[in-house]
Amino acid sequence: MADEVILLDYWPSPFGIRARIALREKGVEFECREENLRDKSPLLLQMNPVHKKIPVLIHNGKPVCESMNVVQYIDEVWSDRNPILPSDPYQRAQARFWVDFVDTKLLKPADQLWQTKGEEQETAKKEYIEALKILESELGDKPYFGGDTFGFLDIAMTGYYSWFEASEKLANFSIEPECPILMASAKRCLQRESVVKSLHDSEKILELAYKLRKEYGV
Amino acid sequence: MTNEVILLDFWPSMFGMRTRIALREKGVEFEYREEDLRNKSPLLLQMNPIHKKIPVLIHNGKPVNESIIQVQYIDEVWSHKSPILPSDPYQRAQARFWADFIDKKMYDAQRKVWATKGEEQETGKKDFIEILKTLESELGDKPYFAGDDFGYVDIALIGFSTWFPAYEKFGNFSVEQECPKLTAWVKKCLQRESVAKSLPEPEKVTEFVSMLRTKFVAE
Image (cartoon, rainbow over all chains, first blue to last red; front, side, top):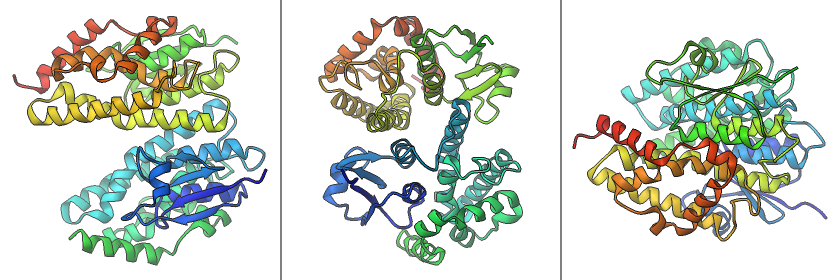
């Protein structure tokens, strides 16, 4: 039976991109459906009634929600190629720990970088860089968080990497001098085929952020 | 090589309870060490430098942090018996989704019920009851969240039940009245040895919460 894979998505989403990357890493054909988050489709509301958020992966009619949950699911279903999580339980626990760190400590300041200004934005910047430095320390001298291979935490981080340029311009700072090693790994990730195909123009992301800031009166 | 398993924990923690249950489900011998959260041990700070929180699972000297990650780790290491997560990828994704829902929603909401008063508490109470009802709706008529077998989501949620009488006392409501099916599920889980051995008496938890409340709420 042919697999039917649909991804309900939103083009600039750092979470949606994770699902796109994972599918492309596995070479899975999928239909990407763009959602208008101000006018969510009946399908989205039906498939993710609890959170009503993207991304939603619909595999043969059945929904999987929450981006890193989607990535794990993709890894388990298409387990015959390009493993995303390591096979060793301890390494898996470490990967999951750091993904949890990223989505608890990096998420809020990352949002505040483009949603706020003045002192609030400065505080967000400090917290954001602090979190990135902790991650850089975890990266060490590995090419990827996954070691030699692009893995679970790299996919999680690429969502944030896709917003690096826009964040730097919006909050007037530069990440490279603060975290040169992390930046090198980010560049490596952003050049990967699965990522290049999943990424949208940084300029467009920045344009959108400016537009939203205006709308929110920032 | 023998397994050395140490759990750094705090007795009323609904998160620590998860790890205790998972270890007992698998029949793993472990050393339980009580932490004083106002005076954290050097071992805790060394093993969880990022968050400095319990529970910390130390397996042959290597730490695993975050309770839900510990439960998955325990399931994967001691995979020969009593599976915690289902084997089907879709069922696993559903289990992870609901554990994530509990982690995102329960803690903050329940905190408002006992650590606040007035309007903030009323709003917190409404949110909390709604979350319980969502979970009850997901449970449906099944004996456990995944169906016939006790598993991941049950383990993620059951520790909160020891705090229910405290929520009821300070929030002035009845969990049983609001969520009769969930209440029945709690009773069923408590019959399981791993759960009964891992959960403190709710009366003791209520005593603890009462003491804690005085620090947050002037009454």
